[in-house]
Image (cartoon, rainbow, N blue to C red; front, top):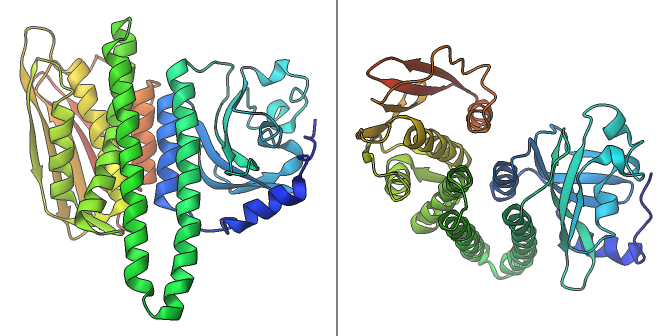
Length: 377
């Protein structure tokens, strides 16, 4: 069923166009929102979706591989007509979507949850949404996180709009460069603070978790957010909006991860070259380190046995190499990384692909290592 138009559609579209966001290139700040939303909500698809005239356009997405689709099949076009969160546990049981071509055909979407992107004047622009191929629900922490990400995207859009206005003003006054840098650093600083708030919320939830399984899932989500927050902290401290020092970045990240380690982890041993990498590459590497180190925390050393986790980063003429290893009990017999269906390993493989890299795994009685090597572009 095609969604009805908003009751003030002309004004809504005018509000959307004031942000000058449609058909702009991908940006790391928005990409990181959908990556974290997908990881925390445990869904294969996450989108920042904006409802334009006759189409829905994606500022950022993971799991879809397209930038826009027709409005007729849009679930988000229904979502912007609803207040707060719009959740469809099973699309096949909802009369509005059971005959939707995205439900009956590829990619066969079964679950949808979207948090509203809304201006201060109350005009809905789109959603931050997560989707899955199977029916499901979100817990209260995930719902709160989705709302927080929608608020963060609106702050980014506002900051982006303000930055554009300031940019034009400074062009006329021949002060564009310095003012633009100030605004971009301020935007990065605010995003860093918001991500640290998310991590704090997850940490509180972890401490009060009713089961070890729930605690472990919350700790993993916290570490994923931590990796992105550390990238933004580095950008803010260095004053750079393009590149960061991987040696310093990984040192800060490993120090933070050590605070979440169980008692049997004695240390995280880091060896890292002082290489300058693009912030989007650094972000992906940070998430890989967080995921693999957390995996070692959970499985490497059984109760009563102590040991270290090692992180090595090397930059060479043909690219970089990252290795995370431990000297614990090793991987289960018959473990195949390519066939693994574990969520954590799916996250790792997704970021390896995003970084245009390859991963090899070796495991023996005395050492387990995950090695990721970049491909020369």
